[in-house]
Image 1 (cartoon, rainbow, N blue to C red):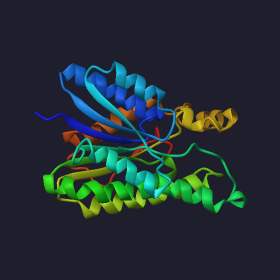
Image 2: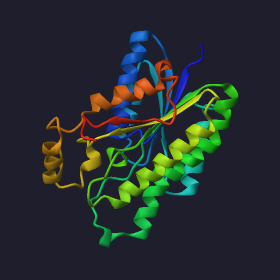
Image 3: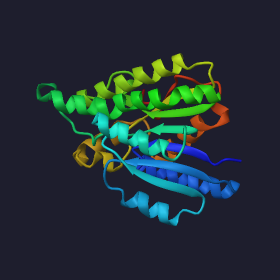
Image 4: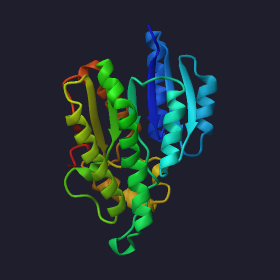
Length: 250
């Protein structure tokens, strides 16, 4: 049996690292092997450490700036150097969150956000979805956000705009490839306390925590299993779904 191949964009994020750790545990338990094409923009130390220590996974860190067309092209070339087409794609990249008011709207910052999150997925889909369809199987999970469910929080227009662009692209891809053996879905968790929030005032994080029905923010270990489920055979009848992981807030 050939090793399954996972392409993870934004793999150096806390979610990406947590998923890889859980995949290692799962693979060891099931005595399986897998290849992880682990994209990062910067801060690759944790990925390289995991690659050196992993027993069940072949982790291949790949650097690329997804805000630039040549960066996305370079990532795809690196990925295709290791496999014709991945079995699973997990799309996680996002610049660190910054709270900005509409009067602070910046064209270049907003465009960069959309490039990193949405346009890069468009290029990845163009490169691989046709091959997945020809093969008759493939699973894609896209990191969305609770801001795409109901009214979004204030002061997050740039981030919200990019996530809605990503949501629209995910649904468009899902309907285009429906019936071809490919499942394309998204997950929308509430705020997670990760390094993604390092530029956010702790008071805002605390306010979000206290305003939640469960009086806490969502945990990584509550998000990673949702990714595993959407990559599993059990999600075979799910396509174009934006999975709500908000604890009942939305």
